[in-house]
Image 1 (cartoon, rainbow, N blue to C red):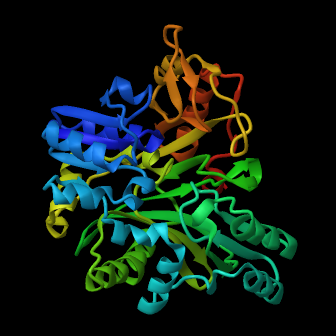
Image 2 (cartoon, rainbow, N blue to C red):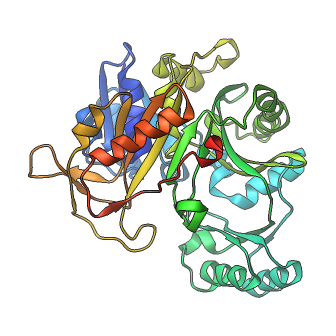
Length: 424
């Protein structure tokens, strides 16, 4: 099969890496890709949101399956445009992707179906939003309605912090049109986990669990990021809890979306809070997580490409998956300054040394080729995702951080406590 993966981050490198392990894959392209992906696929200089160019390429190159990585490409309607040209795609339509691209739609859907989630209100008027914050008090959560690259959510510990978040979204347009509407939620206490299911429009197949680390610094301090590390499986997601999430959250949402005329096809990613009252939805995403995908896919024994095709064509009801018994842990290395302003072009050495260590795989996110042999240049905020398998959480953690230590990058940083909940 001829495959096109769309995107340029660590998630897309993991997708390419996993697809390359399938004997069905004959040619793999990635648009636009990065320096690490270029070692596993043919990179094509087309932006992930350039829908017309991507469709032309897929048709011209007789692509058998397009795997859509980032949410921005889903919001741009790439899956719809490919379907119009009879090109098979793994990823939901623009209408179905609204479960991620509009937090207001997602919350309304949960409320209508009876899926447990935090109490909330939607606002398009900044003054009314501010008045609601003052009325409810803190802690409280303020979310930009649309896509904001993982940075549009503020868990405010004070009223002043929440008001500042409302101002940033609605008065200062910090996230552009994505912040024109905000969702304000009650604060939920508990442990947060991620649960993934493959969906073919009708049936859902449990895929895997993981736990992400959103805050920039150790001890879950600092601003929210796109994710500074993850591990899979999440010990908190027991088999009984997984079944509860499947029957009380995933399956009702899938059925409701089908009934609404926007059937979901792809991977449905539920961000969950394990509260004293049971699991509640924090958010839904319409694609694989980053960096969760890096940990999850290193654990998969089954043919990943076959699973993607079955989800895209239908038939998950009769499909099954096999997994490694090990734990996988991913530590993200980011450019100093991230998630705020950061520089580009700093030199990274030692990636090959890290990958020579037992169980270690390094996935690239924001990298480009360097003129120095064996080196790369940083070209983004989150730059590398050092991932390791281990028999235990501790072994996976030790191996991942040994990989980090092997990489020579003075202008980068990482959290040193990824996996702390599982270790505790």
